[in-house]
Image (cartoon, rainbow, N blue to C red):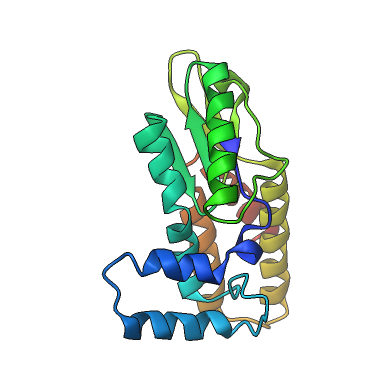
Length: 206
């Protein structure tokens, strides 16, 4: 089952976040400072995280801790992964996954004032998993192959082409080019699409 939260960053409730943070080792001064950061969004509704803040990434990871504990400790899902609000649960019983979906929906609604979005779905591993910009394919012998998905390929091609134009017009230096290309390389290095960058660099002569 692949789940994610509807408009996650925009929907995080400040009051619930602070209440859960207060249960950790943070003191009142820490909580006051965090509340100040949250209010920097200038949102009178007390909902949503300021996009771009490094703290927002940490808060977004922390906010779904209750869901993590539900899935691992109560539902006993052995194979589970989450990054921000993107979640994958693997189990061999479809009906149990439907039950898990109901429990997760209940938890995010009642405990965190959130809801699952329409992209939440149950499927078969053999039909691949689309997760974090990659297509994860389970082969017959148990090996997993990972490929950059279609839209991500188009973005990469566009970015490399743009870098080539910027360099040819002397608008950026070699150091900038190297930093961007190394970032792309790092993104692809653990996938089966790592040769794609070499192909694009050859094509655009960069």
